Image (cartoon, rainbow, N blue to C red; front, side, top):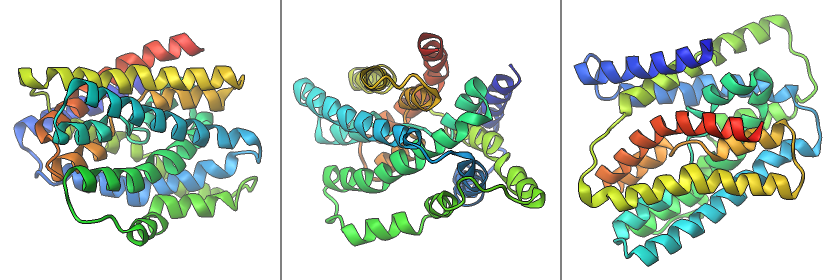
Length: 299
């Protein structure tokens, strides 16, 4: 109950601050940068060493890529059948495929499963969603916005030099290691900032305007992200009998709302900015309800 109270209070604070214009427009970006460069690496270094070297650490990665791949195919064919424009198709290929598996995923899954689930969240997010954002997301935004060609070397360099990914790479070498209490204390203090800061940042970025012509692509995107994607994950875990914490966490991660960064990329690339913002805004709030239903269904 306390975790859920924090989630909704932080979201509400962010939304009210945004409505009243107390902070600058760059505040969500600054908060997200702090999380990406400090909070998330600290949490990764704190939680990943707690994993045991077993096949279970690969489950979230496998499910993440399969869910995103099938979701992308579903979006592509649905856009073709519905005759959506190139801009709308590009937007949906981003926001209906990439999930908010860190900023929203971490506090929600921590609330349901506790701290022991966080290493699996980080594996799903860092080796799944984040790499997909850098590779797939870059390609989609470039292709559908008719921008310049995508350079593979630039994408690879971006991934390899990104602090959360570097921290994950380092943390993998410390699996099974117990850090000094001082190190744990420092990492814990920094890692604990991720939940309130991430949720306030989400609240600051919520947008709810939705014209009538956007209703069909809006419903299509949220149907795939909040219903189709977790059903795919459930099917995978059932097929391989992965009824364990790694499997359950992966299902919950698959059912997270649209990735805020993906919405920002779509908007910056000119891919239906108004629609992209609405999908992210409404999808974020609906994911709190759908994740509760999903949790009751799988556990």
